[in-house]
Length: 438
Image 1 (tube, rainbow, N blue to C red):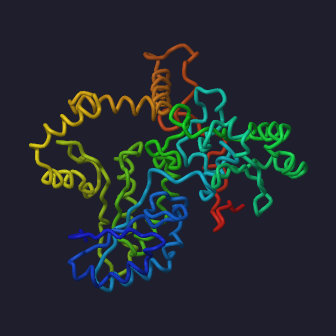
Image 2 (cartoon, one colour; image 1 turned 60 degrees about the vertical axis):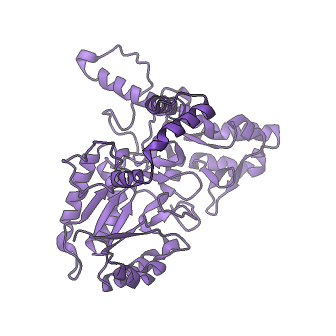
Image 3 (tube, rainbow, N blue to C red; image 1 turned 120 degrees about the vertical axis):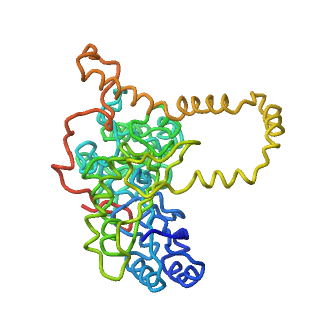
C-alpha cells in the first residue's frame, strides 16, 4: 500500500516503542497512513537518532527490543497504520567499544571475518599502514598521548587485553601478544615510566592498527568514512555477503509483516546505488508471498534519501518509489525568503568576511578546501584506484613501479585477501558490556 501521509517517530531511550504505540489513535485521527520510524537497530549507547548503528542484526534494547517493536506494530495495525522503516546501509559507528565487527578487524586485521565489511585500503601508499588500519581517535599526536599517559592497558572481563585511550575508546591487543602482557603484568607497560612507555609502544607497533591524532585523519586515513566523521565507518554493501548481513533484520521484518517499506539513508554514499536498489527490490519482492494475511499487500514502498540539484531528476533506472523530498522542502523554504534581501546580505558578507560576494566562486573555493583539508586521504585513494585501473589495460599500462601503494578496496579488481568472509567464521556478536563474544 502506498502511503498517503507519513509521520516521523524519532526513537531513543526517552521515546521508546511503547511511547510510539501510545500515539496510534492520535496519528489515526490526524489522517496518517504510515509511521515513518527512525533506525531501530542497535545504536551507540545514548544515541538520540539511531544512525550510529553498532549492530545492524538486532533491534535496539534501549528502544524496547524486538518484543516492544512487535507490540507497537500490533497497536499501530489495530488503528489501520503501516510502518516505513529507515535503514542505514552506508556506514556503521566505530570507535569506543560497542561495535564487535570493528573490534574484530582491529584485533585480527585482514584475517578478521569482518575485514570485508568495512571499506579499508590495506595497501595504501604509506609504508607504516601496510596491512594496518589507521585509528585516528587520539586527542593529541601519538607521541604526546603516550607521554601523557593517555594510552594505557586494561584487562577485559574475559581475560583479553585492551589499549584504552581517551575514556571510551578501546583497542584490542591481538591474541598472540596477550600471553606476554599477562606474564609481565600490566604494570610493566605503565606509560608513566620510560621503560613502560617503550614497552607499550613496541606492543602497539605489533597490532593491526596504528593509533593517531584525530586531526591526521583527513590526510592519512585509509578507510572510508561518512563524510569526515571518523566515528562512522563506510561499509561495502555492494559485496553480496555484506549486503546479506546488513539487511537480514529489515528483510525479516518485512517478510513477517511488521514493516511495509524502507527509507534508504544516504544512497549517494553507496558504490553502486542502482545495483543496490535492484538487489533490495528483488529481495523484498521474493518475500511478499511469505507475508501474513491481514497486512498490506506488496510491493514494498521503497524511497531513497537523495539530494537532487536544481533541474536534476531521480534516475529512472532506479527501482524505487522516489526520493524523500528534499527538493520539495527547498522550494517551500524559498517561499520564506524575500529575494530583495539578497543584495543587502551579499553586501554584509563582503563587509564581514572581506571576500567576494559571488556565491558560485565562494562555493567552488569551499569545495576545493574541503577536498584538500578534509578528504586528502580519500582523494589520494581515488587517484590510486584510477591509476591501478589504467595499469590493468594494455593501452594505458605504465611501468610496474607505480607511484601509488595499492588498490582502493572498492574500485579495482583484486583477489580477496586472507580472511575473506567466504572462508572464515562469521563476525562476532556484541554483549551488553560491549565486549566481543568468542
